[in-house]
Length: 242
Length: 194
Image 1 (cartoon, chains in turn blue, cyan):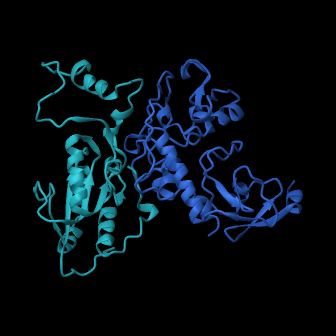
Image 2 (image 1 turned 90 degrees about the horizontal axis):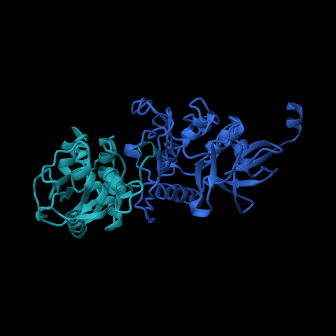
Image 3 (image 1 turned 45 degrees about the horizontal axis):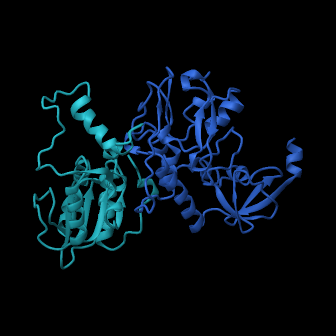
């Protein structure tokens, strides 16, 4: 396999930096290995790529493509951190904030939240131009070990893929279409499903926000020691290049 | 990290106000610590809880607003600040996006979240001892708005300093840079929403 991979390797560039890739690799997979960070929310290591949040949008060959699903091709020139792409990503993240009820000061995911960390990285600090939708969404605390606060769900679908592909269960799924599309549980409520606290889908790394909550462990990590207190999101990947 | 320029011929005037906030952001201003002494060489504080002045005595260069708008008085004060300040800063998450008070905007399954909030707080809540069985209605109380609004939805805001509460460092750094005309945005590492 490794010989085959080496034979089929090629080079393309991201923001002028030469990146090595193997045929079949996506732009993001190759970028991660090369230490170039492309922002993403719906993509997560170990889960199949979905390409739905579009935060990883890059320009390849003059076209906007999702870096997590678009295969890299030889000689390609990819734009990643340009002013216009960063602005578009910031707008996307801002709209995610406005579509749900994301109150960082009261959220137990604060400091470990990828949505919040992405807002920090993309400098989401200017006065907003978008309205707050402030939807009324349900809290599902039926399960003895897990609670769902869907006010914070960004519909990334990582829990759906983790439950189906890793746990082999299908606790979560999408319902509705367009703006009404939501992640729902396969039953009346979470206690109705075969969800368990040990599921990969319920682990803190799969839910990027504070929607899937483990009961009795909230706020255990003090401020200053949480994941994104230590550095900007993506810094582990960028450090590979240094 | 002292970015302060030498004192100019005229001191800048600063005003502050706390609207629907907890005064935590004003306490955070005190977290500037001993650098306040350097800062005070460059600025005079006009209308502010720090000086206890209730009205503007002169036009101000910088107005700092803590908290969003939850009642009509907040809106009047915010308009007054916009009229009297060249640069208006929203300080902290409540001023920026409503913050904790905005929790009343989206109460689950409620068509009238304000009514439900007041009912539970004063009438139906299990742990309250409200002998009047009424929502406070003294005419001196400012009327509540239907929702809690971020400052930028009421007036134009020039800069927002994030945090709950913002650190003394980000407040000092931003004010120092604004005063010497060198503010070009925040370092990403300094941005915090909590």
